[in-house]
Image (tube, rainbow, N blue to C red; front, side):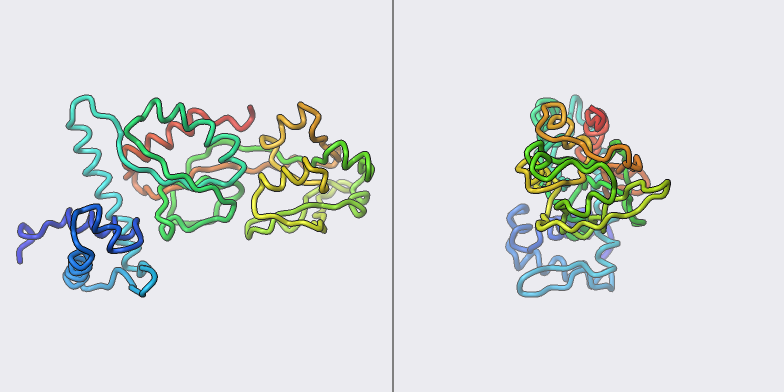
Length: 302
């Protein structure tokens, strides 16, 4: 069969949607096909390429290494096709579905409040938002954009910086009245130091002590899976917490939380990035619209 007889773009789109939907049946419903027809199409594609793209089990589909490469390049090709079609359509605006994964504090303080303004500007784009502080695999989770705080690991992803935020140790007035306000680093030994239980959390709190930075381990009686939950524990008087300044700026201004040991704060900060698949500038108009909107509207210093 010649290349002209093969609907390569159609095959590619079906494959990409299978990966994104996580099943043959869900992808089939998008194309008015049967799951069997989708399965046969993927099998023909694998046979033509001479490589297995998906490992199939009764419960899930997982990309092979070859499938990961094909998927990444396929997303870029489909993005170019979408750009070409929308660019040719007079007065067209970005449209489609964008999946976003963001850490919980950023989601609550920035992303969710921006959604109404984004919807007003881009009514043809729908958003699928997941908030979690665990770092995800964008490809495996079929996510277009992930917002991550802290240092970025080396990967094939592209990143756009959204800003940076300082860190601060805080406690509620009630907790400090009952347990005392620490004046020196060693005073923390008698305080309940709350922490997070997700993988990327630090092993302790960096503090200046006698001119050097030391790491004070967290010994709290509670650990929690997200930074916003950690803030709520501090507000409830459960203990001290070290949080991003943007999370607690309003609480500090209102007197609900009090910064402590600022004289020993090393001044470290966390960078916040939006990361995505888009090497070589290949990015769909809908994903680019979300990224540009975030860069334009997110101000971590506010």
